[in-house]
Image (cartoon, rainbow, N blue to C red; front, side, top):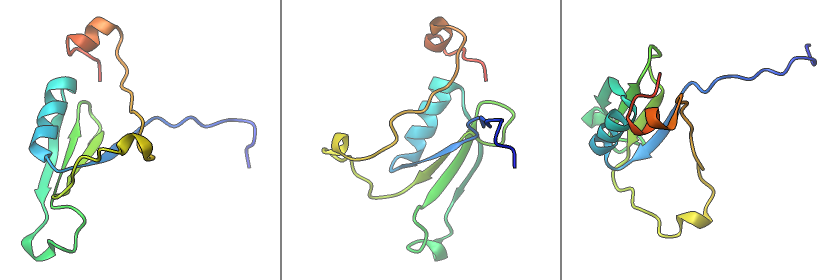
Length: 107
């Protein structure tokens, strides 16, 4: 076993739940140039058993997906969310602040 070399994997993708799939897809499209690679609805016979009703795989590069958005009906904003464990942030690399603000981040 190699104990001398530290492996530093790159972020491949992450998943997010939302009650507003269309709005989330639209935001990521506008803000980060993401496109929908695959989108599907849970079949009617599986609704109620699946933890979500639809999903969208989105990416802004050659990788199949960088983000998976899971639509989960009934989610509500948590007014006490700042007191709960949660994802703190996810970062994307841009060459300059102007690239970020202009929507020109490299993939």
